Amino acid sequence: MKETQVCVNQIELHIQEYEQDGDPIIFLHFSGANLQMWQRVIPYFQDRYRLILIDLRGHGKSDRPATGYHMDEMAQDVIGIMQHLNLERAHIVGSSLGAEVGLSLAANHPEKVISLICDGALSSEFGPYGTWEGSETAFEEHVAHELEKIRNAPLSIFPTLEALVDNRREIFMRSDWWNEYLEAVVRYDAYPTADGQYGRGMGKQALENYMRHYYHYRFEDYYPKVTCPVLMLAEKDLDDEREKAAIHGLCALTAQGQIAEIDGWAHPYCWLLDPDGACQAILRFLDTAVS
Image 1 (cartoon, rainbow, N blue to C red):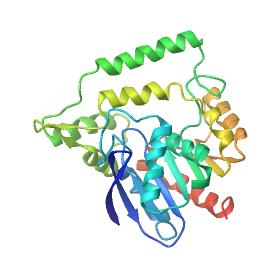
Image 2: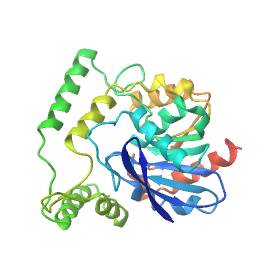
Image 3: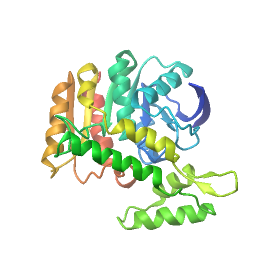
């Protein structure tokens, strides 16, 4: 495994490479995570593929600018990394935020993407493929309220690294999701502040920047442009009928889309809990849909 800092779009992005002769796979993490989230996934792929794990801007060991968090802008970061690594094309595996970035990459730079695997970007917040049930006016009021909450939230700063870890442990223990892999993600993401304390994740301005864009994403504008094979990872026996309809509707917009329903899938943390079902589905997809 090789670690590298890559200068892209005036910022430094951190990557890990697992070199192999096979096709490259780029893994893009969810918001609030980092490249450490893929540690349980790597063994499924490293013998057959060249793996590239990226800390997206605002996460992990990459720089944390206040701006540049639209999915299209972050896709340009990935393009820059591919150019640095002399990668003409790659498979993309994205979770949540990473799926959004991967979708933008596949839609706007189809020559760069061999296939796209999405754990996320499977329903918009509003619109014909959205999960919002009220009016557009009510939705915009909801968005304004949520953005105001981000602006007014206290900074998540902790006196020590262990205090930060304890805080995250307490939160995730409520769902019985805390384990050594999630702890590794938390520890990796922590960064020292100027006064010797510890913070985590995107700053408030960066998070607001991302969420302002996110609420108005319309994934139906992207999927029809995707020409490569697409695999959508969804929870088996999904209860939310609007979400289920959105997934199937967006899949129908793709040229080569299919859905893999994963038993017991808990988006997006199952990569850290039990990724076997998803990884096996991806391997089958790569073997059959992509040749």
